[in-house]
Length: 148
Image (tube, rainbow, N blue to C red; front, side, top):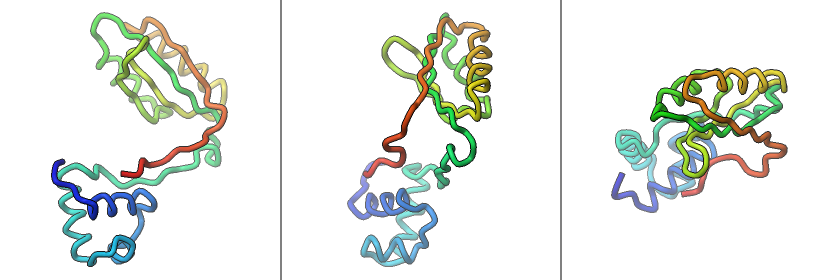
């Protein structure tokens, strides 16, 4: 979306800090009127600069103590087919096309090591999955929005 200005970015940053802010509170934080915020948000949403509003759960507190990054090599041009299949799993938070030695990067959360193990073994049986490499996240230093 072209034509974004510092007010648009300030509104986005306010929402990234707390997506539940009222229009009035955003207006006070940004230094514009509530009507301006309302119109800007509508334009940002219509232009897909803001795709959705959501919560950022603390997965550890919810019992998902295993967070993993799983890299996948896919053969025979079946990248999207494999990605769509992986993305349907309930523990998968994100699926990305990536550059480098692997084709796909998956970020997933599991309650147990056994759950992670079963997931990895399952995707290794998928047609066109040649190889996986799994990294377990030991400690999260930062997780959240990018300030724009």
